[in-house]
Amino acid sequence: MIILGIILVVIGLVAKISILTTIGVILLIVGAVLTLLGAVGKPVGGRRSYY
Image 1 (spheres, rainbow, N blue to C red):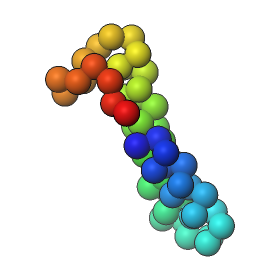
Image 2: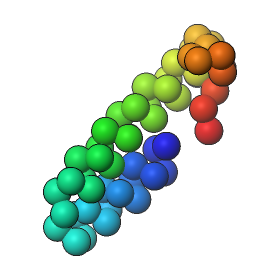
Image 3: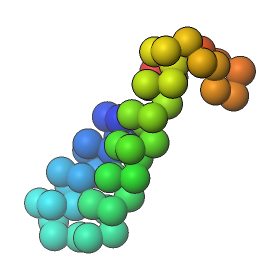
Image 4: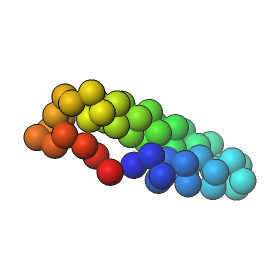
């Protein structure tokens, strides 16, 4: 999810499409939160890690 977010942010910035940049930033934030929750051992949705 984090990699997809980075790709969308880069494409959005290069192509100057703001909706792709916005969606990419949202995916980055959600991916980072899920990764942090998995790293501290708190299972989210029945899974300990998301990657």
